[in-house]
Length: 358
Ligand code: SF4
Image (tube, rainbow, N blue to C red; front, side, top):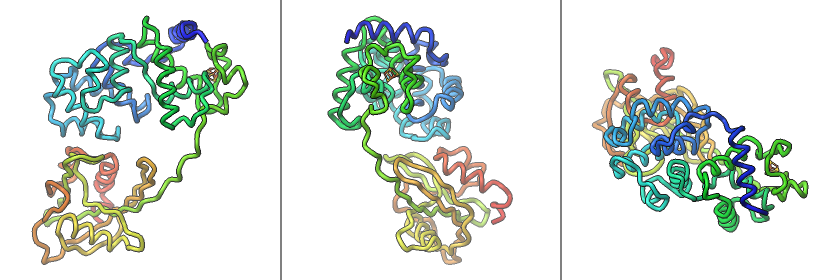
């Protein structure tokens, strides 16, 4: 297959078929970086308004670097995967006035992996470097009828080499986006729309009518279900106890209600009492379950049981074991603190009068 003819056809198709997305109208590396980071785990529809709002608040890299990380995390509320926001902030502080221009230099910043570094280098600076996401992998696995399982290391290596060979010196950033756009809009996981595809002649799967057989995918592992208990303890003024998790991990630098995983055979009441005792050193009596929030993290379905708890008369001061700080806050004060979307859902639910009275 001639790579140059595939690139030409794809670029022509992209010029007339690409979606009109706001970050496609800029060459600002910072704005492009932000869009790529937000899009990693979030839909285009959800990202569009948030991308605009973020840039209105911090229009430049320097302004982002000067912002308190708590404000950045708060702005990120609802987008999930907060490590992205923390890393962006750290990278902004390290970068100074501008992001580095090359792929190799960009890779040195925290949170910029191969994908994001390649996106900024190729789209903003025209560096000839491949950009490989799940859409690109699927298109190339079909075009080249890649026999290896798509998530395996040999497949990843092969697909990257194939992508590398395809990127033209002319308009590498547009080519990369064209390949991703083809995967997102035309060469879809199910029922690819080959009739409107510009590269049927180059596509091995199309030529052998085996599109549905590629990419090769092993069945996914089953989801596991996890029960968690999180507790609402109030002080004499009705404020709730929040704990601050520092360090690393998914929920680092965020505030949360004390929370434990319910052990096999353990009742929710016992788990609630254990959460107070083990995380805050408080003796409590477990009350009713206020609500249950269900959400999914990676391969786990989590049922978060929110339990009311009353402090024992003899309970002393908060004594932390895993967290860095504890605070008694009103629901309004809590609203302003960085937290996960699930914790925000709990806060909002508690703010309704029925639950507040409970
Ligand atoms: S011809 Fe079909 S299977 Fe091949 S790249 Fe195009 S849309 Fe995908």
